[in-house]
Length: 407
Image 1 (cartoon, one colour):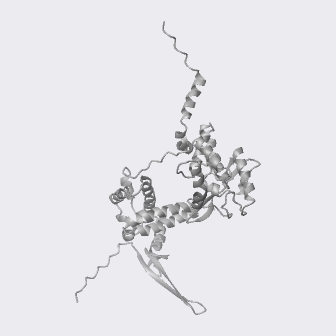
Image 2 (cartoon, helix red, strand yellow; image 1 turned 180 degrees about the horizontal axis):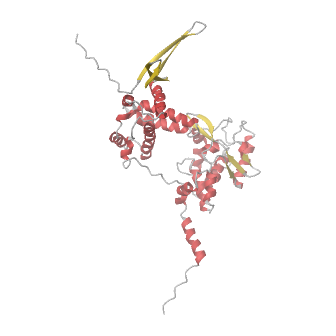
Image 3 (cartoon, rainbow, N blue to C red; image 1 turned 90 degrees about the vertical axis):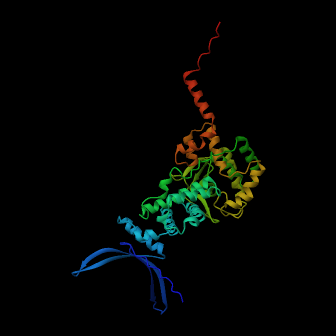
């Protein structure tokens, strides 16, 4: 029988510590035996004198899997200003570090920095694009050349905006690896000029004629007020889906944006709105007030709900059923192209600016973080603004006198 060559065991690098599984077994008072297997990451912290003898001090970190145990250890080392053991960095794969990255995302969600929808979008990008290519690659072996080839391979498969999104999320993951001393630097630093870029497309709004036609065909629909509010307040879709009757004050002609609906895998939850300054108040037009009064009358004959715009059974609206059953038929009846509901928000903003409403007021209505975001987003829709500015100078300085005809 031929002898098989015995694989030589890898020699641990100094300071690497150890990583192993440990099974704990215990017996309850009732006599039942239980066991639990954990992963343990152990490091040496030098020697201490104890009873006249030198004893090695060791510290242990536990996790349900190897990656979790490493993460607990590396967090401690990072807080102590020490680097992740060199030997461990050499074997940690991109897939293993992705698990750590998403636990970091979970912490940021718990702290209110990010939303669950953000994690869902990140997970899709990592699962569909990053892991199939780099999952088994040790993270320290990830090179800028390899990443650039990866981007080149995507160009024939997905849009430039999707590749730019992959770049942003991969960059966030690698930056965390640098922060946690897993990498000395990000491989993306060397390809900044060649990094995928996607210019944000100019937003498109309905014309005044299209907006009027949409309102006409929506008259009598059970969600007529939803379309009307979108066109006259610029509220986001999630904010409209989450609007409650307690947020509506028809006597004062106001709605208060206090929450937003988010849908993940068919489940709807309510979260704080995107507006950085918190809740916002929007003054309603007479058209919007009348539409809400109509919705109020209709709601009394439907399933009881605290929501202004529930489905027929009083439950929160979900995107797919709403678009299929309500929005698409209305859009087609109005003769509008295949556009998403968010276009109504852009329409509200552009109509207000064209009518001369101060951009600061428009910014506050939309819940933008700054007035500059409003102007950057919508200025191309209002070419009349510069003409208006030129006319203002003529009003200040007067028009130049006409030239005399030469005799």
